[in-house]
Length: 531
Image 1 (cartoon, rainbow, N blue to C red):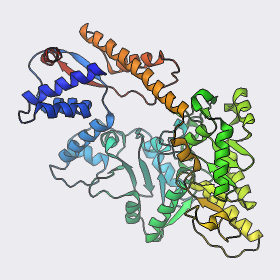
Image 2 (image 1 turned 90 degrees about the horizontal axis):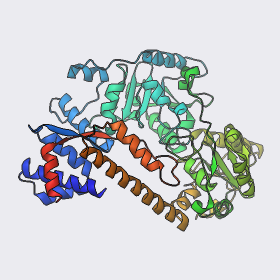
Image 3 (image 1 turned 120 degrees about the vertical axis):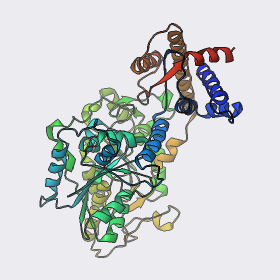
Image 4 (image 1 turned 90 degrees about the vertical axis):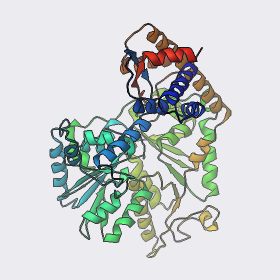
């Protein structure tokens, strides 16, 4: 790490002296200190290649976001002829303007859109548009392969984006990190919407513009938080559009068919108390105290990291994330984990039994929420993370309970604060839906680290620093020996150094490596500057 930073400081100092005389060396060094990769990228982008022969190529780990954002800005200016105004163009139009024919549509993509649109006309669906987000039923940013519906439909493999398909149009929104990638991966049938650029509408604005008044917009309610679905419903109602929750099946899954990857089936494991610091019983006791304080009977936990933290468990269902697909409900006297039973070993089962946690199938969450609602139980739901399918089922159950009680009228609203004395009452007495819509009690508790967790974070960073020190020592030795290295070789060796460390399980994300041209005159100057 020290060698790398020292070298980059020398590199940017050299750039300031030879390429931009007006830029003082201290400023350049500070720029390199704050962002070494951007400093190196700026050096390469502004200075013409030296006439001296190349000594070698050196692999340098560069953040993808910075480089793509910089590249996409320049490409947008180029495509618009220097005009600062940016407009949404289809991928085919962009390639036409740039004279590029290298990117061709992926075979079968037309069939996907056609098949999806055919489903629109089914009597049990009857929609005019369908929105396909990137997340799963737990609002996760990173998801298992079987839930990568947006990637399957569009061909775009980046981690962020939203696809919207109408009967006549298909549009895809993503942010500045992925503009270049989207241009290459989207077929001619898609219009790329560069989110955040001037003149580019949001998904809602676009839908309200292209759809005739009174259209039906379909979504899979499992893939939208309750808040997001309510916001969408309100926004499209301005044009008299109706939001349709298609809960029984996902339309993309219907056309994906048998080629869709199987759901993850990785085993779960117990997170040892020496790392967790607090046992499950104590954590559940805290949650129950919050239930009592807020006048609730049950809380539904749907965020995967919160379930894993609360139960001192870990999994491998999502690459680079120690989580497992599950839901958790905590009641005053019991708790239920909704997870596929084949992921639970005898050790994990004993761990859960000791804490008084029962097991039910992953799919049973809707039935249980409905059962609780029909009994009149008051549920705590974090509407920013709990999906719209669960909230919809809960409200339907509440309606049935009200009818059983002979209540023909009810007040619909969210209880905003636990300090309000009405939140201490049960919903029926207050003539409200039996729901408290508030941030999960686990969110803040998980954020405040105990001594064991703090010690664990420090130790893991020290072990990773040791692995990086070994890595930089190795790569500098390879450079001195004139060994030609590829990006893949460097990434694989870095992974091997990390695997040697105690307690290593997996990386938090795939290594992003890039090639930096390393010139002889730069190398010699750096040797001189570093003494």
